[in-house]
Amino acid sequence: MIVDLRSDTVTRPTPEMYAAMASAPLGDDVLGDEPTVKQLEELAAAKVGKESAMFVPSGTMGNQIAMAVHCDRGDAVLIEEEAHMVYYEVGGPGILANVVTWTLRSDKGVMDPADIESHVLKRSIHTPGTTLLCLENTHNRGGGTIVPLPMMEEYRGVADRHEMKIHLDGARVFNAAVGLGVDVREITKRVDSVNFCLSKGLRSPVGSVLCGSHGFIDEARIWRKRLGGGMRQAGILAACGIVSLNQMVDRLSEDHRRARALAQAISEIRGLTIDWERVQTNIVLVGTDSSASDWTQALHQEGVWCFPVAPNRFRLVLHADIDDEAIDRATAAFKRVASAHRS
Image 1: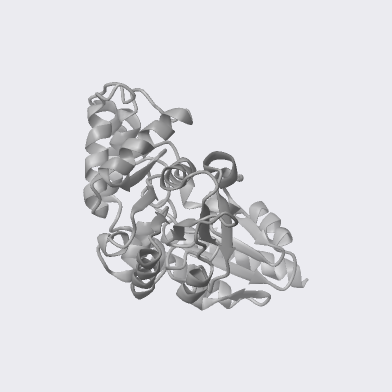
Image 2: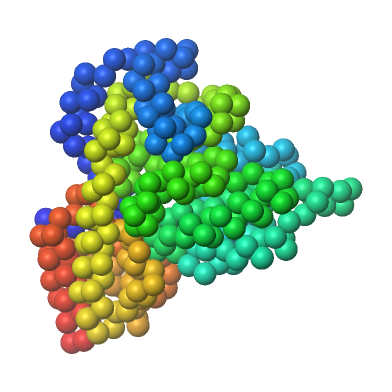
């Protein structure tokens, strides 16, 4: 059996999701009469403490729409240097929102508030005005690391002092909330908009939700249509999202537990290292003393699928389709590959 640790996007829908799809009342979301989409959007907005929400096909679309709504052409945006919005969204900020992105260094995805403040620009005949701060919580390339609540509060203070908005790429924000042991609204109350994914740890097959004020979402709907994201009988997909939000949040702690268990097993294998400060949620970054590509190719032959993310580092992501037995199979595969490397 394959142990697929490439991403938490590979999860399959649950029987409850298939049943919800089969029975969902449907309409036309572009025409504004899709009852199941409306139910999901109302539930999502309430979950994260925002006035309104909009269902989108992907987290990338939700993030780029947020940037386009918050900014005017030529504005400056502050964002962490390895954030998904600049690293994995194919130049969207420059192409779609037409903004200037100023990327900042971080410590495992957590930026220094003083560094943020020192990079704020005032609009002038020479300089763009900095109007938006983008955050990512949890941080993908940081290894699923959590931005602490006190730091979120400091970011809010910087933004308020300089009349900036804050958008949160919260693709895995429910992992952050579970990891911190708080209601997700303790994180999202400090931002103006948040996009979270249903199709990662929450196990839906497709979709994300962008949340914010009524006015923000009204403008976001125009951008969604402009980008071709207006879907028709989208309630079939939204029905899964409702199951995700009602049934899949609390179980994220199981993914976190298994991530720590797998990391512990790997840390005992010669030639592999774990940075324990990064093992905070459901992602494990594994350091190697040889080629990460060689490791991932050898693991693939053993039925364990994962990706290299640097020349000497690869990534494992735990999710609902990985149980304790799969952890045991993966551990055994790691040991076989390690043995082959030494021989």
